Length: 381
Image (cartoon, rainbow, N blue to C red; front, side):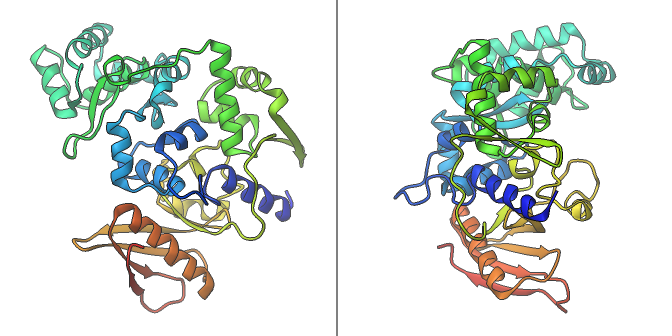
């Protein structure tokens, strides 16, 4: 693919993902967490802090406001697909799990066999959850509940039993209880669950994905759902009139006819979380992550990503945070030297992250060729 085409795809994706401009930009108030979740369909959230920043960077919300949205039951974390935790609109959690998460894979069955989790354990734990999780219960308390009724929660059994019943649509995450995740019956926690037909659900999923991630390939959607191409093509066929197709080097790329406008000029600088749709929302990451830098972002090649510095829609470095008593320390390490103008954009991105945490920020520059890191301190505004 020509580099000019690659740049064009990157800029379109940054706009579609609600990053430049962010969702609701220009309005007087941030958009809600629910609006972000509806726009993207689902957002990676296997780590709570990373997932909260995925909502914050697109909305202008603070961490406290994201957590309030959880308490208000607008968005929930659950396992809607790929055996991975995502933020989804609360009203969509049940049908997404029932349609896409069906926990019947050979891999899962093999893992259950390794852990000694039996069909009886699944049935008994489900009955216990249905009886006792009418209000949010912390993970340690869920483990204690299992022990009390003769089910061994050790060696990740607790995690897998909880995950299984989230994937069936029985339970979901509730709000944090202290620093512990909690779990609760969907029927008790979510005031209204949508119940679309199968066709409506497939069409909604395909439309949201292409609009919020495009340009994409059909394999990107299949990988996002971890479902066969046949199901992916069925879903896309239901929204065919909303798709724009473009062929580049023999590959068909799909965009939404009502895609978010792509601003003129550079796509800006972003400090994105460890797990974010920007990278994990696609089967192939070559458009946005140069292959020569992959191991710098995923050192163990094990899907454990570092938070990324993104410049004009391309991963250009990594960053990490260190929460101090009075401020957050943000250390940014680009892959190549940045201009002074780009560093000023990095400073603004770091200030946005500090505003999300409602604190001050210290930016530490670890640029290649510098003898030592260079730090600056700014307010959260």
